Length: 99
Figure 1 (cartoon, rainbow, N blue to C red):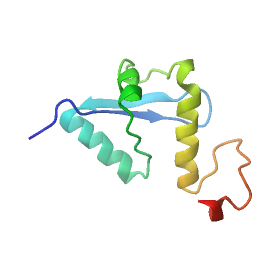
Figure 2: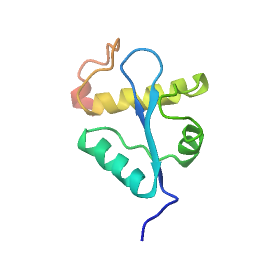
Figure 3: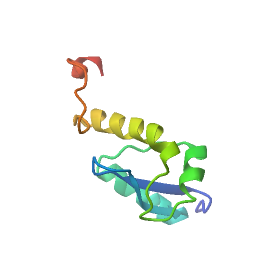
Figure 4: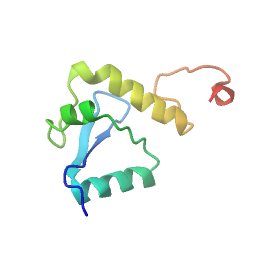
């Protein structure tokens, strides 16, 4: 049985400016988006309130300023997990040993 209430919103960030909504969908399309993000090594973050808020945006829209901090923290965390320092981030020496 397909869960048509399931939703996925993918964000894209170049390292400059605000992240944008790169894809969004429900049901089988949400499953496909999640599968593609996993294949690309992206972070999957489950937060119903954040997803509901982001779902109000259209593909290509920049995230609103009130979400900058939480999205920036999630993106930076995903880059660190993937062994890539975020642009302009000096990081912490020995971060590999901490994580």
